[in-house]
Picture (cartoon, rainbow, N blue to C red):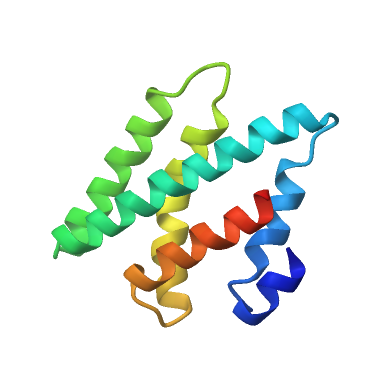
Length: 121
């Protein structure tokens, strides 16, 4: 993970954060949580791309982010809540990460997904 992520610094911190956040006591539990994190990231990236391409108003963007976060948490599976909660919080971090790294969301979202995948793999 470190070898792949170094060229992407400061965005390259995500594989390390992923490894640390999915570490559980058994490998099976870590595997399930890693898949949930990857799915949450994919959903958040897709919504972020849709949001930035379809909405011009900043107020509408904030309102739609709020609705997405609420819907993600409300429809979560009680047995596996991590994917929906991660999706709910990742939209904001993908949009902020694109601004912080001086990248368009269309450039940053795939990079974020790739770095999360590296941390999961």
